[in-house]
Image (cartoon, rainbow, N blue to C red):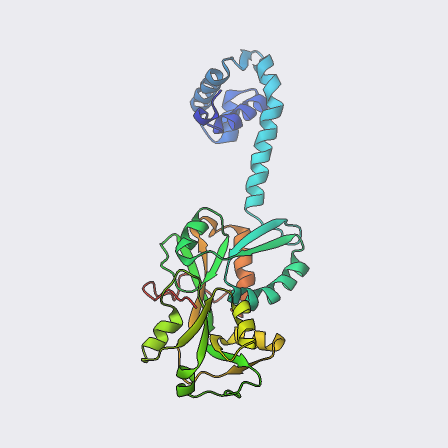
Length: 320
């Protein structure tokens, strides 16, 4: 028996015929005509290579084969019904699930310290896996289910990927305390003359910050490029170099490391960050719940939030 060639609806009809022992009554229960029930029974007989039911004075009596399979058929139907019901609801307190979120270390620092304690209290069996996926691979990773959500700057997203803005990240400089030149402030000339440490994802030659500075005819003397904000912050701590990073990240690292946060001597447009998810999980209760928790963590009113609301598809992919 090849399941690919079987209409699973036939098993529901089989169950009702077995219960009612009458094709007309079975049709009324199913909401279809008696000829349609007869046609379904004929297809079932072909599938099982057995009459399944014999017409008698007492109704349609099941054959031994029908009696042998009815228990398994009903168990299978109940399993399908249960799966559908569970798929339409999400009991947070008892749910056991692992969510995979694509995010950079910036987003990890911003969201996870607030999000994880909430999850521990509200959903103790929910686990979060965070991993970095290159922006040009995000759409594919969301589409194939590798990622449930992604938090990233502007990417070119097709119509089957939804998004909503969740952050505006302004920039600041960090330098070690007791720096020989900088003590809480920096001039534009000093900024251009300083040695800089830079963070990139390793695939972009031009970053959002570089492009913003180039528009003002400003270039930096970058002496080292790395891919981890934490590692490069330690390098800043051990040198006279400075680093330009999102201000929220600068303040966080300054709380733990002997660093000073310095206001930029120029205006740089904030880096906009978005949450992305695929159409496949648009109506998934579990994914909806997680999206709402992240929006709450970002301080966004979920009632006023609408997806696909403010992303400029032609914007430069923001890589810092």
